Amino acid sequence: MAAPLTEAAIERVRHLISIGDLVPGQRLPPEAELAESLGTSRSTVREAVRALVTARVLDVRRGDGTFVTSLRPELLLAGIGAAADLLQHGFTLELVQVRRILEPAATALAATRITDAELDDLERCLHQMSIAPGHNELVEFDEQFHHIVASAAGNATLASMLLGVSSRTTRGRAWRGVIESGAIERTISEHAGILSALRARDPLLAEAAALLHVSTTEAWFRSVLEV
Figure 1 (cartoon, one colour):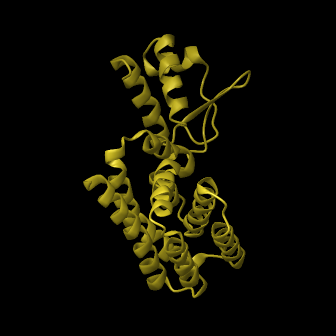
Figure 2 (cartoon, rainbow, N blue to C red):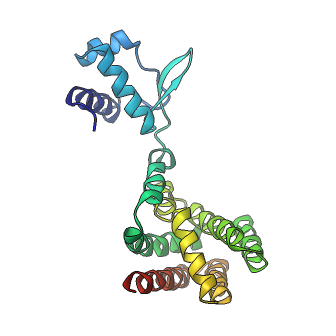
């Protein structure tokens, strides 16, 4: 946890951004000037900047200065995925439950917005899953499949949150379970159902297909954790 003075400086910079005094792409004043305007020391400003760089709010460009980032959802929410990968096994079910809330909604939106090119990309992912030689390939193409669907929803914040809770670690655990239970064909069939609903541009059917798929994953995790 940052020291109180650093926390206060961080909040002041965040406030300047929230009220529009600092905007995406804008360069911050020099360190001494910024320290004076924030009413704190230069060392405190340096600590605050480091913290905001880690949070992807600021970007230090050597020889050029410190800038406010684009503040895009996919940038600011990227930390969700990193945190999800570090969660202990017992919290995996909670991540899947959050995914069960978000993914059907994103898939329903995607059904009304997805392009023919994105549908073709999903078809290729599905084919690669069907011929995947091993676990790593299954995880890779499964991740690509759901990334395309989330992006097609046209809501960057929703997509970023969904991709964050659908961490690669969680996907890996799920596919290991699928392989061990001999349910690869069924799981690929669930993906095919999602694709079919998207091709039909049917949001209700797409939502139901996604809910079935995530609910199956949730049921498997629940059975493992209850053993």
